[in-house]
Length: 609
Image (cartoon, rainbow, N blue to C red; front, side):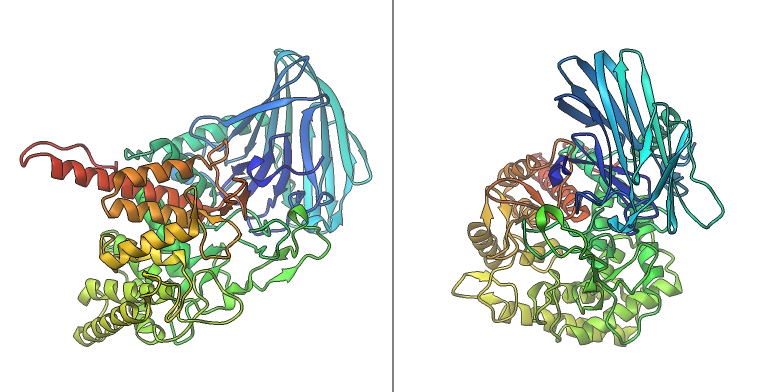
């Protein structure tokens, strides 16, 4: 069997890595060392790159869900002879609760098979392939444990069903009956660090994972609009957090295509500064301020001292800067989409919008940064100084163009954001001369954007200075406070962008973009809410939420014609967009209520707990 479609996968996480499991019970992606480490199961990108499936022998249908308030997946298979459930979890450290989950995860994947009715013949196919499918391991077994070892990787599988080994794989058959359970525990360890893979009891792994995730969920009481979707999205973002550092990766995968058969297939298992501010806002709105604090601490450490060189726009999960890209030509790619890439050469680019992302995040977190450390003060001061110089320069833009640098409007707007927030910070980060210099540059940027970004013929702000091309990135203008959403030019831009780039609520980034880009679509929701068009914002939000898969997960893009999810999965940016849009709707609804209620009358409670 081939790996299922992107949206047919469920997402498991342990604070260090992620696994993807399809509806047919196959683990098609797992990089156990850490998010951006080599895969041991990579069938998402090539049928020969490894998988681990547990499924009925005969034809079946499936229903699945996460156990409530967890990332523990339960898939129920129904056959002609009976019903069986498979529960999958990545292990958390035993006893870890709340904000401690994921810090010391043992790198274990557990699967528990339970018969629910009748008798169901089952089969297990275990085909580990290391180093993105390059390496076929030696697979040997005893009565209790099957070891797979090659190079620097070792996997140990403990199962209470008979398994046979051969040709770099293992397989087995058993029958699931009512009242019986079959347990599988797969542990990872580096070959040469002196330790063996952990092999805890599978039931205990599941129980600890359930308790751990629920303890985390219990600390975050979001009470705004679309509570279920926001809570699930917040948990996905938490699952994509590398807990030892607090960094949130953009996605759990590499090289899932923006267009089937296309070549825009990038590695997203890294941390983008661009996502940083929006992720902080989302965690804040979802009542997760502790995670927001960790995020800011991480970016401060990763950036270090700011000099004259361009600010790095992305990092590895532990702050690595060199993310040099290379091709894996031995892999066919998802649905034949090549190249398959590891690393991402966007790390070399100049993207001046990141200056605004960080200063905006700092402003959001200003009360938590008081008293401000000398390191943070120096960081914010240096970023503001860079904005004074860099706003005049072309860059690669937020969509990371690989052909030529341009004067992208969103980059200019975010330079304005950086300078605006620096001025607001005042003497906390600069002296009177600094503040005067930053304020003058801020006003220059604003005038340039209003003059060179507006296109009279289109009746809209465009993607770059003196351009005729629309770009959905201009929708950030009201969201960072550059213009109010009901400004006549901004309102016209929203209308033109929606009319020209949208279909059934899905908004492309530009005219030739092959699919709708999820976060851009949610930016439009936020803009409508800020413009006072609450009913339209709600309708559009609900249209977009209908595009989530059955587990509440988004990829990066959705095909406007077919509804198929495309791009890396799950995508933090998409879930962040959902959370922030729900927050904008909540705030707009509260404003409407306040304006509708006579002075002195009590209003409803706020969104944050």
